Length: 70
Image (cartoon, rainbow, N blue to C red):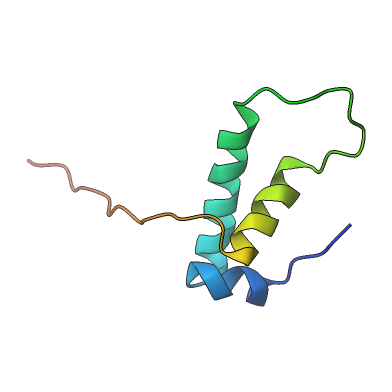
């Protein structure tokens, strides 16, 4: 299994914390799609999302949190 370093993740995400958040959210999106259960060689979703983030395949944007009016 490949190990992704914080530097690899931060290269395309800005910093390692944002990279982990983006990869986790992308893994949740991947989990919603049907998967081929007969394939035992399928990668874990978190590994797949970290791989795609470190290669620059994931495009995302940061939306600032809105303050409550009041």
